[in-house]
Image (cartoon, rainbow, N blue to C red; front, side, top):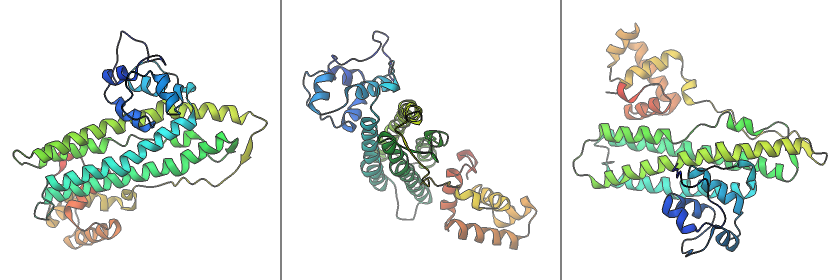
Length: 319
């Protein structure tokens, strides 16, 4: 976030053009609030009124993202959820597919280059994870808050159930960036350099998105929960939560299978794995077959990506 010591925060009479000049990433914020470019010399208030955007929600969001003081209790949750939903659409329907298209152009995905296939598989698994994360927010968290706004309180769910498990979804893009930089040597690959910059930009954007959820959205929902819980007009329900207690696939592997998987990612042969783990070669072969069947991953490259994604190994361990 950008900080400007000469100013405490943006206010309604500030010109939109000045916000964007000070922090160009706010262009994305405008789009997610449904504010088009071409705003000329209009102020924040002018633009918000013109496009039916809640002025206080817009200001608190841009102030937070610009490093200025903000107050999460000033926001309209309806308006903020519209912003967050639009951000999800941007990432899932535009940004992540666009990065994948660029990756396909920049690396050799013919099957001849194992590292290229590792990179693509890693990216696809990451994009699937992001989609699941955001669809859960759309279909469970936001619907829960929609009901709160209508005066309906589901006693089997509270926003802390979400915030307690809400982890940043950008860190694996940083790992992917490291994989490409460290393990895909190719001279003057401008396409690859370009997609790397896209990955870095997307990583920062996702991080900012998660911070808005954690620092503005969650506190605002907690305040609403407190207010509605003490209201005599509240309708209480005990609905079955849509939240799924998802266990990572790594939990489906036994400890010994995890040991074998880690050894595979380090480039050990079956005999070396058997010697290291004090097993027979036949047992190692059986473990490898069981691992592939459980995970439905049948290539070493895919197993490496899986091990990285589930934090069983670090990039430095891979050969």
